[in-house]
Structure formats: C-alpha cells, structure tokens
Length: 81
Image 1 (cartoon, helix red, strand yellow):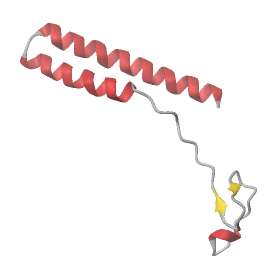
Image 2 (tube, helix red, strand yellow; image 1 turned 90 degrees about the vertical axis):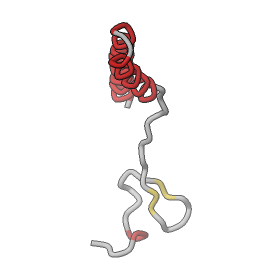
Image 3 (tube, rainbow, N blue to C red; image 1 turned 120 degrees about the horizontal axis):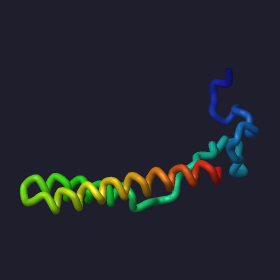
Image 4 (spheres, rainbow, N blue to C red; image 1 turned 180 degrees about the vertical axis):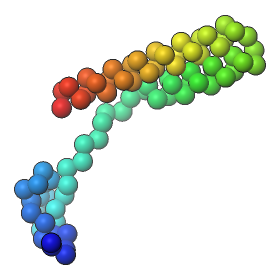
C-alpha cells in the first residue's frame, strides 16, 4: 500500500494535472431548482395549517410537483451517465 498520495497510479479514473499528484475525478450533478421548490412547498403546506385548507392544498401540490420533477431529473441524469 503506498504511503504517499503521489504514489497512487494515474489509471484509476482520475486525471493527471501535469505534476506527480493524482487528481481524482469527482462527478458533480448539475444545479437544479427542485430543492428550492420543495422547500417552498413545505413552507406553504405548513402555512396552510394556520390559514385555510386551500393554502394547504397548494403547498401539497408544490411538494408533489417538486418531488416528481427532482426524481425525474435524477433518473434522466442516471440514464445519460
């Protein structure tokens, strides 16, 4: 087992940056608005408990729409990879 980082082989999926250091490849998903829409839906949903049922239903709709959109986006990203 190598005891220094620069002794790791460059062939395990990372990139060499011109020096002896190993730069690992890290997959970062693209940014999305769905978590923010989900947070808004949760806030509106709980606000509906203090006001009226219509606001509660709007919040529930936002929660469902954001979860469907976010999960769909993750599934399509996974299929492309």
